[in-house]
Amino acid sequence: MKIKLITIEDTKKPQINQVLESLKSEKQAAASNGDEEKANNCWRELEALELNILFIKVFHDLKAKNYRQAWDELEQCEIKYGFISNNSTLEYLDTSRLNFIKNKINKFQSLYPYCVFCSPGFKVGYYSCSICGHKFSPRSRCEHKKGKVYNGELCLHEVHDMEMLEISIVTRPVQKYSVMHDDSTLDFTLIERLVSYLDHAFEDWDINWTKMRFPIERFSNVSKDDKCPCKSGETFGACCMDKGYVEIPHVDFIFSKPLPSDAEAITFPY
Ligand SMILES: [Zn+2]
Ligand SMILES: [Zn+2]
Image (cartoon, rainbow, N blue to C red):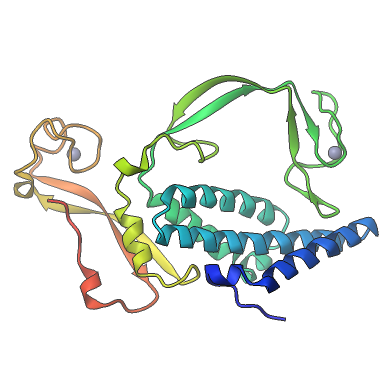
């Protein structure tokens, strides 16, 4: 049985739910019969299907301009992809669209204006294995590896007696949920333009970051105390004002289909 899974409407089809449910019960049956290989295969199929659905939600939320929601879903996609790829062949990742999704996750993230995050620091009492319950100590581990699937279950390390110590402000967070911006103050034009030309989540596209050089005369309305248009974060006076030109980060979108000719315009803020 083949079911089309491309749009948000497709994800709501009862057949999709049926497939998810039957994979779950197949996995359980295989696990209780000791058929580890089958249980692991069912786990992989389940995760891959869920990742496809989640990625379609990302696309839907980007179209609807729910950027923060889509950001959180992108992070969930990235984590899910990590666990699946840890337990799959390269061929599987290609044939189940997962590599396509992974590639697009990173590119969507790179188009976000987010740059400041908070990162909590914790003191942990002890960890235990989610598969066998073993309590870890420096000299005592179990045979299970974190991130590997055993009999259809993912091995994670569970944290106990956790105590929050501090919150740091960082630019490259371990987990990307903790965005410290107010979306209403940010510019999402890049993503908005990109998705406006895409019809569905699995249409191919690419981006190419370059720099475009503009003569200094174009910036006569920028004063020396304004932020420099080159996005260095410094003031214009301390940065490019005396250079004769300004190099601005520029992104080209590459689509797999021809676009209407009016879509090829370059947007330039000065
Ligand atoms: Zn264990
Ligand atoms: Zn500059």
